[in-house]
Amino acid sequence: MLLVDAYVRPKNEEEINKIFELEARFGYKAVGIDKQYEGSSDERIITFPVRVVSGRNEAEAKEVLRECKKGELVISKPNDPGSLRVFSRDTRAHIVEISPKLVHLMDRNQAELLKVGKSFIGFSLSSLIDDPKMFWWLSFLLNYSMKYNIDLVIFSGASRFEELVHPKTTLNLLIQAGSPKEIAFKIMDGNKLLKILGIMDFAVEKR
Image (cartoon, rainbow, N blue to C red):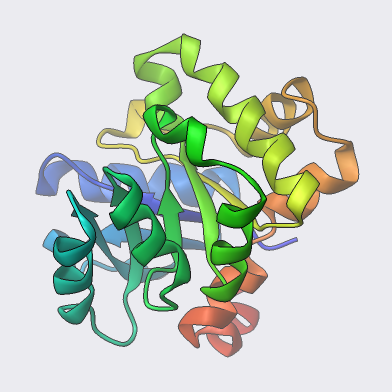
């Protein structure tokens, strides 16, 4: 299993090295860092840039995707049914971080759109730290992903090193949310995510 934290968003440059150091101690091999700090690196882990985009409607979603570049991991945040449809079916949006306010749209048709776009459903652990009640949403997304065979990715979304979560804690959260252990391990394995970015060979070298 290759541990990957798909997204951190350091609040300032001082936090970057602290985050990298703790991620390495936790056993993470690759970390996605907000595009604002693109170029930051650490010899112990692979780093890759992350572009976070959002759309208030279908047209805006299409526009922000045009700005995406190869080599970036793109996390999309839809705010309405139109932007959800666009992000889900467009292969440039690697991860779709769906808000609980769109729960009424999470049906079989939505699952088919995610499969068309080969998209991961994303959940940020920072949202759970900010509001423990978000555990229900993690549980919902987990069961939805298992029901429709959609990839789910859990990332820290940390802005400070204190917000990083140990992988054992993440594993236990997934199990408590209803995941069989073997599925939880599969969710935490970042191999597929890195392969999408074309950096799989480098990941193998740094193990």
